[in-house]
Image 1: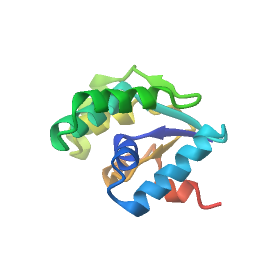
Image 2: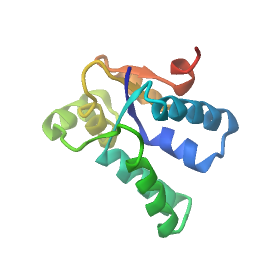
Image 3: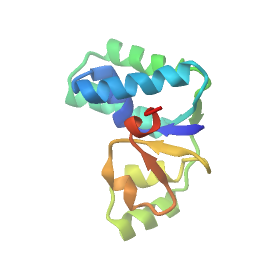
Image 4: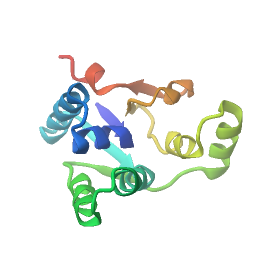
Length: 138
């Protein structure tokens, strides 16, 4: 199974501020580290993680940098850097969803689940959106 990991999944894991979400994300990452799930994420997602940890939660940069390095060290992680800005703008206008999410939606490889807690992604007809709990039931 292939998954694209959204910023809120990384954040719930690093912040561990919501126990139920943290445990679900922890279980997901255990499956990734066991090689049972192929993970993807993107530079845009990493930028969101950096911004939220540093600017919203006021976590010191050295700790945030280590968290980002930990993400990059995830087993078999593919980091997606390419996106379609023109398509993203059209999606943003049509769906009234924030541009960053539209950009991320254009980065997700075919036949890949988007793992997120963000309900706006359900508005994208072409995405297979799941919460960590839905992927780790069995």
